[in-house]
Image (cartoon, helix red, strand yellow):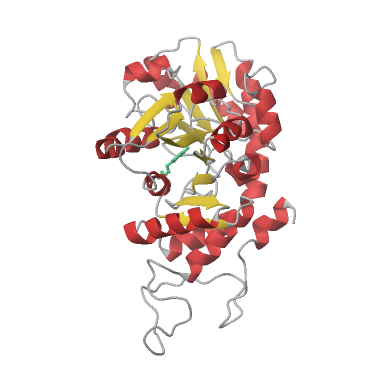
Length: 379
Ligand SMILES: *Cc1c(COP(=O)(O)O)cnc(C)c1O
């Protein structure tokens, strides 16, 4: 099945009791049993819910995986992956990933004896050189948030597979429309479904997709034992969002390309970070593992200062100043004071995340209106 057909039909089965074409919101905590242990496969809603089951099936199909699991948030999905590990285990992660992932790793899991090592994963050799006998997981984000660095998933998977290390890719920025990490050798794909999968800025949710049945059992056990499950209404919203993912991503990508090129030609702009530029360091890899380049980008002004950035951030009218990304409406964000404030300043600057960096989540409005809004704000 081709991508667009999958988005519409994945996980969709007419409801067995009524024929409803949309999976109903099964707002129930428990299910009546005919006799003790005699039930229809549903016992208690933390363990099973039909709306969630439809969504998990859809997630697996659109990521070209066998199994999907959905969580109450993206960080809850990440949390479940780390709970596969034990004290003494080591994780190698990207040094410019989502701030909340960094916070979860350093502030929550380090104290349980798990060690996290950070490196520039755009060079797989950096990963190779940090591997020890205790390395159990490599955590990638590509393209990264917010600097749009690209890592070659298949090159990293060659290393991890040869050493029996799990490879998990946070695919939130690309969405399953632009990139399917399992096809390139990843073991687990993680999503903040809050972003492109939901697509309408109205839900918090996370997802994991995998191929290995054993891994699925372990992660399902963590999902039900730790209990970070999404409610059925939220599952319904993400199921609905997936139906237009391909249409939205096409427009996000078109608008993204127009805005990236326009910003680059603005004399007040110093640098635009967008992986669709042919001279972007990761362009060849992006071209190989992604179908298009999406609507996420960052830029700095020639005056790469906190004050100059703040002026732009408070002057746009269509781009709303807010955290998050991936919704139909355009958002503008200041990573250093917002999404990435939890990363120490020294650490941030070292990785190129300056005080003046501005991140855009380009929506699906008319590109000309968005360009006029940015021109006006940049002045
Ligand atoms: C938002 C985000 C997360 C965390 O997801 P939540 O749904 O907010 O918990 C993780 N990774 C990336 C890349 C994100 O943008």
